[in-house]
Image (cartoon, rainbow, N blue to C red; front, top):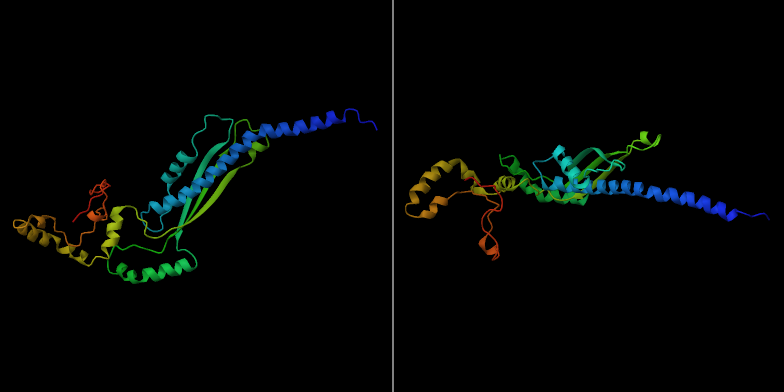
Length: 241
């Protein structure tokens, strides 16, 4: 058999294939990194929506997309690498499915009449967060045709099962918990109570701080504070009597 040069031809074919794979590894790695960043961004978006509530049914806005871009998609000075382009974020909030939804309805049923009595009790069975992050990929400037005309985008989802007790801050907590405090209704007569407290403070100075129905989630009982803890409010929010 005439096999002269067969090994050389096999090596040339294998070397060409391996060279293309070797040269393409940085490109493949860059796209893989963008996909991982999109997955992490969708996860972060779901957690952000559960931490920073301003009410029920609030959609994700532009500031959230800007925060995700700054954290997971920093600017690339090298234009020979793919980068993240336009981004869109969406968040859906609703009741969890199955037994979790039924358990939530049963637990919240005794508190539902508070919402019809003019209370600020706004707790709803909306612990399920669904986040969607769409990221368009900007191809490198030197991408040859026809690959430069192929649109590439990542669409990632993340579902988080939390609880409806999340709030936008201590102010919302105070308004919500105020519906459970029976003396909260005395706030309408607070001016009269303040006059009486001012007169009684001449006898007992502690009456200066008398505020019926006060709800301040920033105050912790002294028996729960450690030796290094500070009793004052950790935030800038201040309660109004």
